[in-house]
Length: 308
Image (cartoon, rainbow, N blue to C red; front, side, top):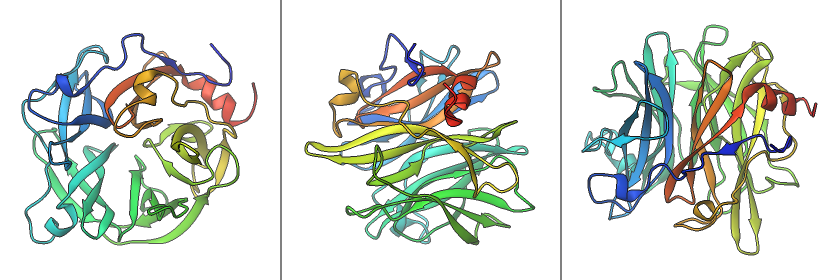
């Protein structure tokens, strides 16, 4: 194992492709992940044959072999309030448990651009929309698993569309509907993510701070290159970074990551921490399939302090 690049890919990657979906679709990628009732659960982004995305559940006993549900779970809403903003799809979900409720943040995509939607479930059977939490252009949103000083906290990525630079921001709410007190956390800089940054996975609470993975995008002569870093945020003031990896720790290498509908992309939306400290990272590869890689959390935490 390379100390600078701690993740080891599952030898039978990719674990899900369009052929594994029991109904016609173009691609499957960018899945949220959670362990629910002793089963591994993925909430898949599936792009249909029209190019619009919806969300479908998949289940596994071992975290590697998944069975995809026979029909979508979350589809674009026909509610007049939501419909104009979800008309072209619901995308890139993340799952956060707060008390007894699982909250799902997702990208609502419509003719005006992307904005952040929030919904909830207690059983992964019923789903209730709560809000469209941002204006456009905004995406890559995650919620913290507990309130910060009495408020819900959300990290998002305003901007970054149409070639513009995009940074990682944090904002707060009392009701998951009205958001404010926004502050920038980390912006693009010369290096491996100079074009735009975005949070990838919901935070894990550690004794060193809130741990999360984030992605950086670099424009190259052959197009965009998506890679992954890690950061630690202060437990009481998560707008403050207490450590991060100055180099990327995971990037496209394998053929299924290099070639696809959008080449040279690794894009995690979910991580699961096992009892032995192993972190399972589920990621979309080239916007075409889903793969998994593993690393020890302690190893990544050391990299966040640049202690190799």
